[in-house]
Image 1 (spheres, rainbow, N blue to C red):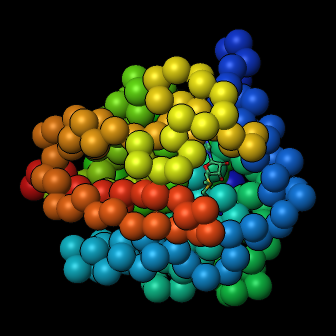
Image 2 (cartoon, helix red, strand yellow):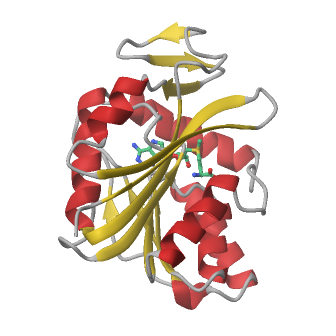
Length: 229
Ligand SMILES: C[S@@+](CC[C@H](N)C(=O)[O-])C[C@H]1O[C@@H](n2cnc3c(N)ncnc32)[C@H](O)[C@@H]1O
């Protein structure tokens, strides 16, 4: 396993996302493996979508400590797992060695506010569970989805999940504007449906599936969309 790319949000005035990187570092340090070892329901769905499309390699954005990246690797996909928290990724690296999948997992510290560290049309599938709804502006989210489209091969699949404006924490805590609210130290961009539709322009939007996760529960949408062939 290699860590061959390091691109972070350095060199700019610190803002909310930079403070959030510190918050995620503290959170993963205090609670190693906090999301557990089992893959998310979203990853189970994504693996089926990716396999049906004949995908072999997967880029994961916001992989954290890797519950889903490791599952994709165990399923036989080659995975590039990225996150802006080196702390989460170190936990992923250790778990990958324990599970004997280091040959199929590469980790890269990367802040999604920067261009993705991949060539055009170089990956079959992209997965992002609760990443697009982090402390990103609407403009940054649009730029990121354009980047996902750039790196996907024609007919490539993108499965992502976001907390939405029907979530119990929407409107709770500190208002950062642009539908970003900070509660308990975590900043979340709660998605209105119009944003999902805008991000799917020029894609084939296969599904917007509502689901819940955790004890709150978090209310999310799972979006599956494909680039044209
Ligand atoms: C809600 S957690 C989900 C983690 C993982 N997808 C999972 O479900 O187990 C969001 C993750 O996004 C990462 N993250 C937040 N903002 C980011 C950014 N601007 N660039 C890259 N990663 C980011 C955090 O470090 C954290 O690991």
